[in-house]
Image (cartoon, rainbow, N blue to C red):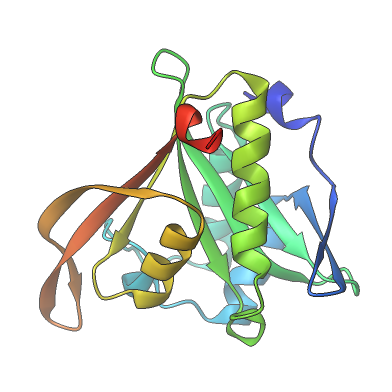
Length: 185
């Protein structure tokens, strides 16, 4: 799958008259982003959360990055500081599908950065011909993520009922997707 990304990695994105760029990232940059943003993983994922040391986290990221079915990008600002992460997971060549995940530093939210980056990636992925479906999963309480997916043209596909525990309460997770045929509209 990595070959698919060579044509559009390290591209400049101009969003609201500011320069940002996407590039594939390494384990050190992933760890730096996680530490600087003090991410509440329970907000981000319904998966099992383990407390890990920095070294254990670095090894986890290295393993994730070495899997040919994953690709992780950072969004960097003009000062070459990582402000966001976009992850493509679980590429399935048989079904031509991939899962997308994203996290943006709170100081950069509501500026169109993530929606523009996702729209750009979706267009690039579909233009390769290697992808038919891009999907993601978000918690029903995550209004910003729900709005982002709607702005990017994703369609609500299903609900995983009481799937996401947060702060002692169970919430639904919602699955969204976008098909290649829908990107042409």
